[in-house]
Length: 194
Image 1 (cartoon, helix red, strand yellow):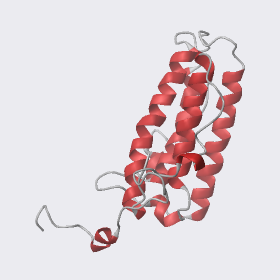
Image 2 (spheres, one colour):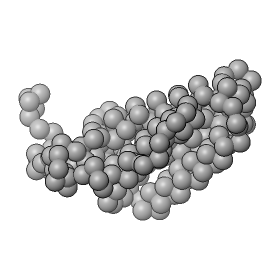
Image 3 (cartoon, rainbow, N blue to C red):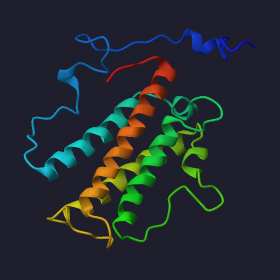
Image 4 (tube, rainbow, N blue to C red):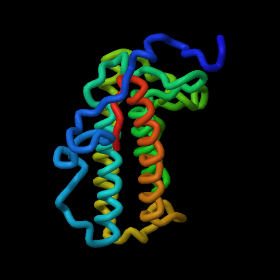
C-alpha cells in the first residue's frame, strides 16, 4: 500500500461538519456553549476553577452523542488512545491531583502489570462507558470538595507543592487532552470546532 492510500475506505466517507450556524469552524454557536459563563473571574481562585470547569466541559462535549463503539474507536496504530480511554484517563488524573496533594489513593484502572490500563481497558461495551462516566464524575466531585477545603491556594497539602501549582498542572493536563479529543472526535464523525 502506498503511503498516500487510505487505510480504510470508511474513513474517506467521513466529512467535516458542525451544527454551528454562526461560525462554521466552531463546535457549537457561542450562545449555546455551556462553557460560556456570566460568572466574572475576579481573582486567582475563580480564574483557575473556571479554567478547570471549561476543560472538563470540553471533554464531555467532545464525547456527546456517541455510542460505545464510537467512544472506544482508537486513533491510529500503534496508539491505544480513544475518547473512552480519555475519560478513563482523566478519572485517573483527577485522583492523581489528590495524590500530589498528599492523599494516599489507589489507582482506578492502572496496575503495575498494565500501566496503560486506562487506555487498554477502553473497550466498546456500554457498561464500560457508563462506568467510565460515573467514575470520572465522582472523581471530579471529590477533587472539587478537596480544593474547596483550602482558603489559600498557597497551601502545601502534600508537603512540597502549592495547591495552585497542582491546579495549574491539572488544567494543563485537561487542555492537552482536549486537543486529542478534537482529533478523535473528528475522526469518528467529522465534527469539528473549538
